[in-house]
Image 1 (cartoon, helix red, strand yellow):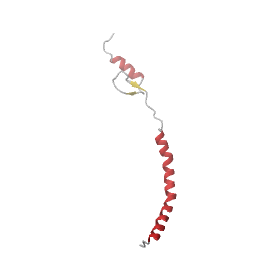
Image 2 (cartoon, one colour; image 1 turned 45 degrees about the horizontal axis):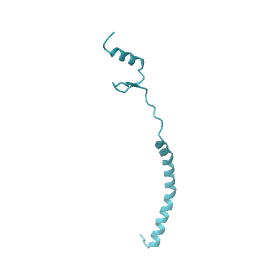
Image 3 (tube, rainbow, N blue to C red; image 1 turned 135 degrees about the vertical axis):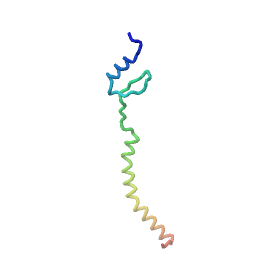
Image 4 (cartoon, rainbow, N blue to C red; image 1 turned 60 degrees about the vertical axis):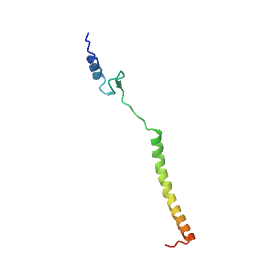
Amino acid sequence: MRSDPDHVLDSIDGAVEEWETLSADAMRWSPPESKGPDLFTEVRDIFTPLATAVSEVLRPVGDLLVRVFDRLGGDDD
């Protein structure tokens, strides 16, 4: 029996080529991580267009209030 363990590692490399190599530690192989979408990203993707639409709707109201307060204050530019 060979005292060099590299032939074992070579056999493992050949059998699991599609897996990712993590390190030379005891837990050498691991299947690729598949991260699903996280909650923050989903919430951001939903509420960003909603917040943009609300701000676009409220912009004319804010402009109107500024004009009203300018007239009440007597600032004629």
